[in-house]
Length: 353
Image (tube, rainbow, N blue to C red; front, side):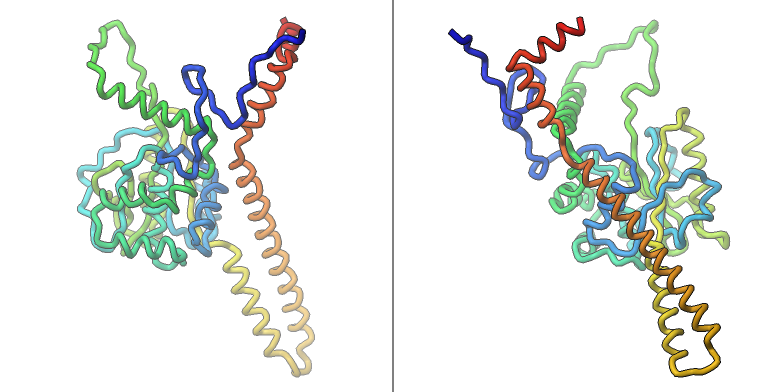
């Protein structure tokens, strides 16, 4: 008689911490927020799906290399291992001209920083969803704005589109552990016990942006925005770089990333192409301008090639990001369970022993 084997759990089931199974969590309806990697491509796709037009996110490898960035630079986002930064002398009540939101949801710092930056750049086309959101929250306090971000399903779905089932389970576990820790009686630390300053220190995103002649550091965990200086003749970046450099120097490891939000180079190239075509049109019917026409034709080919290169690079980047959104864990889980159910996994493990 063929032995009765235990049914292999479906790939649509998820193992919880107790080894039992429960229905999977749908990331599109999940109420939490997952951490987002500081890849420029991730932020580029987020902005595109928000509906923002004409901007690009670039990684800054050195504070000395800001001059090579496409201009203008609208703002910057810094990811660093979080440390308390003394801002009492810089914190100011949020002026009416500045849009600032507190971070009210755990793990929402990337989206909070991005919105705190983009909603303070009037020359950029934000698209209908963000434009309406900015108008709707215009008279809100920073706390209420943070709560509206946490409750804005459109924003949350884009943020959580990178979530894997394991990410969701880990986030839920962290929230549960945080709740348990807050409600657990504190134990006095023995003098002999070492204190690890980096123990469970999370990474955090903050934004830097110029608004009406002032440079602001916008940290959703701060009660108020911090005015760090005036825009000088050298530009706002020189003021921001000094502060960013100080924060980087305070981080003992190299665990930081600096992103710049700039004007999309394709926009300038399209404007150059339009100017080129206009110049070509002016030469129609004229004699003795063959040299000018040939120069314009050569320039036109160069511009078109540059546009194609930029668009191809963006398409390739977007394809890779969308691939990273796919959750392969259920597939691997089903494959391993199928091997285990047929006894193949046991043979493989015993063969390596």
